[in-house]
Structures are given as C-alpha cells and as structure tokens.
Image (cartoon, rainbow, N blue to C red; front, top):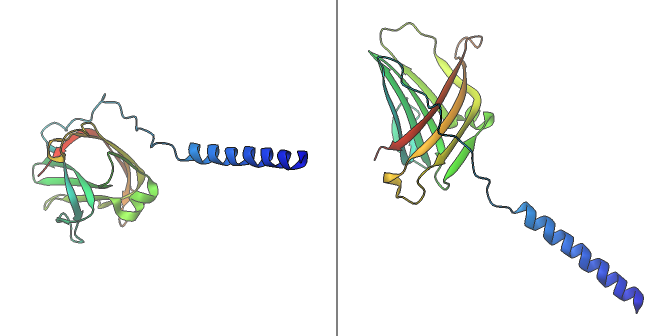
Length: 176
C-alpha cells in the first residue's frame, strides 16, 4: 500500500512538472520595444511618405499594389525625377511584428528605384531586420498609427560587392 502511495505521489509531481513546463512555454507574446526617439527625417529637398494599407500585396511587376494577405507599409522618397520606394509586407493578424534576414530574403521587403535620367546601381534587399508596432490598437485601422524601425541590408543586383544600408524609423499612417 505504501509503495502505491509513493508511486502516486511521484506521478502527481511528474504531472505537475509537465503542466508547469507547458504553462510557461505558452506565455503571452512579448511586447516589442521601439522607442519613439530619433526618428529618421526626410532628406533636404525631398518629399517623403510613410504610409500603410491593409489586405494588400505587390504584383510581380514593380510598384503595383494588389489585393492580398498583408499589411503593406510604404516608405517613398522623391527628389526631383528620382523616386525610391521601400515596401514591407507584414502579417495582418497582429498588432506588432518582426521580420528577420530570412523573411527579407523571402521577399517580405521590396526596394524599387525609378529614375529615367539617373546613373545608379540597381539594389536588392538581402538581410536586416524590421520591427513594427501599432501605437493605437484601440482605434480602427483607418485611424491607427504604426511605428516601424527597419535596417535593410542591400547589395547590387548585378554587382554584389556594392553594399548599402537603408535605415528607417518613422510613424506610418493609413492610406485608405
């Protein structure tokens, strides 16, 4: 009888341990920490936009937004006849997100340069990180404000020795 009670106690302790481990592993999503200091500014003489739209994606042809499954963030910098656009594809089902090297390499960040009279090297995103947070989750999407911090590592499309880093830390507002 004593042996059965000892076994039962050990089994109960084992089950309690399993429940504790499972409980700790199912913890709430950790809140992203993005401070609102030192936001990037638009370069002198340029026009910049920081916008987002929902349920969108990019067509295979450059800069065509189509219906899709993403929250699409746009950084647009226009100076004279030159325009640079950086698109970030984020999940729709969350109030915060992070993207890593693998996400960027898998096409979650797109970079386009358009200039008919410029001599430039075509660049593509190859790594980096992006984190974003809805600062107004209690508001409807068309009134919300997101804070995005992104460091995107770029390299030349035809010449990988050409390297460039794009850094953005800015508020994004709805474009719908």
